[in-house]
Image 1 (cartoon, rainbow, N blue to C red):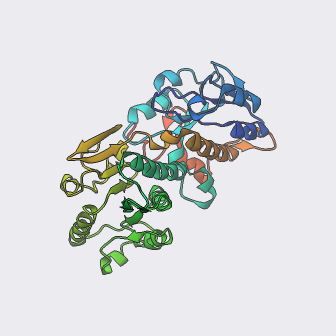
Image 2 (image 1 turned 90 degrees about the vertical axis):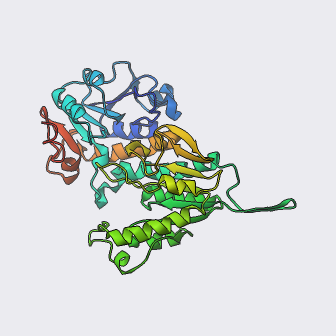
Length: 376
């Protein structure tokens, strides 16, 4: 059984799909590991580090590989080098990319999308969205601090007092919670908002204040399954007014709201930005899906009336060594359920809930129920 670790050809992707630590663990499962030259350099991993862990460095690493590990979905030119039937595991970004799914089906590879991992207990260790969002939340605060022209913590000096920065986090998922924790550690006064009432306690536990119109409708705004209910137009108007009034008092706003398969919801309007003080900073973590902030531009920091709007591309990749380490562990945990430890051979259980949830293509066809019809 041969596993290949492919180099990422996208110049904006510094992450890698395996580390020396996971190479050792994969070898213990019975695999031979081949790594393309320079695959880990941008994540601080040299070819020699992989060799020391037991991998082979080869420019034709993917040739004949039973499993190909990547960060991003392979291009058609990459697919041409893969053997038919190979398992290709990556962050596939399948929504709205039907042609790419068809290309993988045509190449007759078995494609698995790590971001489609089901939210069940046994899959937590494989949850790529959480591992990468956690680091994105941290990095968003660091980036905001870099763009902000003042200090974060309150400082009392002989020359006077420097006030603490006011940071507002919009969306309290994995990224938002880490952003709250990071901003608090840096000494900021932190507030946060979310459409789910259940996160109020999580926000408070991190030392931040929860901002929302907490009427009867809000208190019943969550389904039994933990999802947000659609709110009334009246409630939305009240919440928007509260948020607009709150934003104009903030120094930094970080937005994290994403909906799988849909454009990111607009949370901060141009009118709201106009009320913010010059020198304020907005960091939009949803910019790759259209953005939560009106005027945010993918891969750029723009300035509107003295207010900076940061739309950094691939925020987890901005701390590639850490994000690669977590991603590689996610992949290893996934591979553990695909490999028979006794025979040390591939043994994919197609009835496994995790396998069914993540498999995109198989036997020359798009098989995932969410994409099979669209890709026809």
